[in-house]
Image (cartoon, rainbow, N blue to C red; front, side, top):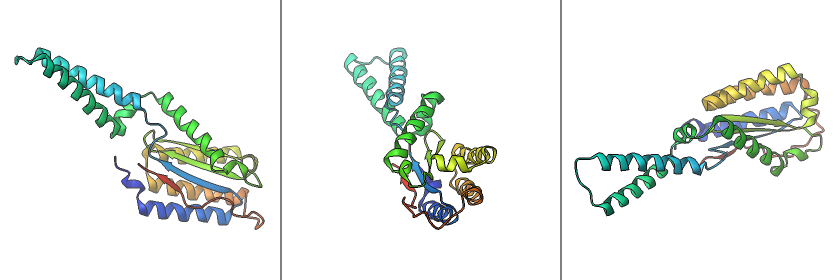
Length: 209
């Protein structure tokens, strides 16, 4: 599984971007980038079962006669191979899961992170979570009430659309650009007052396994 677009250079660039945001605004932004928001183990087993079934059909229709024991062994091996390949291949997991399920998994994981990381507990209620899950190519932005009250809805939604597009393409450069644009909006409507301490870590959390 490759996350070449989110390498060490991307980490440094995004860390600098988050720090810039927090020097210009009272918002406390946390960026989390994960490989996936669920194991989707059922998709691995389904792909393994499909490969095992295809292998069984091949063995049955093959002009070569196989001993029943070998048929059983080979079907099991096909299943294990299929499950392993799926576990290492995001495209297979996306193919064998529904968009609705993936959206729920990302949303649930982001909501849990919002509270577990303390983003919901900043003094001025200005925490923002930008949560990107690469397998699903989905992004969730959760903002506390202090941010939402300060932002014009139309402009805020326009910036969210740009972030979602970067997530759909899983592109680190586009994400960096979208965050810079979000920084401009936050600086305009929620500027740094000098009275809001930096309560959350600036470095993005890269959880790429």
